[in-house]
Picture (cartoon, rainbow, N blue to C red):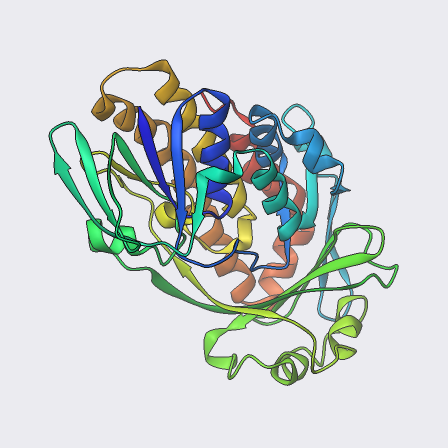
Length: 367
């Protein structure tokens, strides 16, 4: 068995780790010249932590992460709309953790053979020949593989080439950055305005991950000045952080896109992670679904059988779960983008119940 993983982000590196644990031969190619680190910070809910445990990496991640046991949602004026003890939902699954994106990437990289990753190389074509795929690379190489895995993100060239599918704009653009802690953000904390969201999550005792989003038609050039202008009416604790940002602050900007979950399998090709099911970050499940994909695919390949059957079982195992995440992400975006008065009442009266109902399905076993 020889597997090619296209993409060295979270999904690709997690798949490499899953295969290394099971003695499955693999290679990773990444079109970028260096490891991708976009996104600043990352939040892992309990199902993502459980999947990292399945990869033998939970202790390594926990050692550099900040534990999150509750969430607080405020209005843009600082009024508390909801407090949820989230640890109660995840207690039998895994801890909720926040850390820098680079920290997670480094743990994954350090867990696999560094010689298995080649940077600065693209897949030019793949062709079915007998029971394998012949892959041609941009560096002139040509090799045969039993399976080709597309893990190169929402704008995956492999998905567009094989399946002819492009991402859908969801009408939201965002900013992400890491700032020094002001001592007031001690857990997952969100502030909601009319169609605009601020989120702060501590990733260490000294740093806070800040996320902000708005309708794409308000995003303009995505500058810090635009960010500060759009959130000028937000009060503390998060509004003050944005108001005090230096114009030269390093910020990652993105226009959010979605790839609707479906059967991404085609003759020894399969997609995982954002290449297969990117969605709004409202559910904080991008990394979680990617790592789960890797765990499930690695286990099913290790169990053996015809490749077509393995991939069909993988699809059947994952499709309901990722569809649930995407459905709930759309619902959350609709709620926070609608009437502020209605949203505030819903969060005050039903916030805790909604959180449990939304996330309990993800605490169930993967296999």
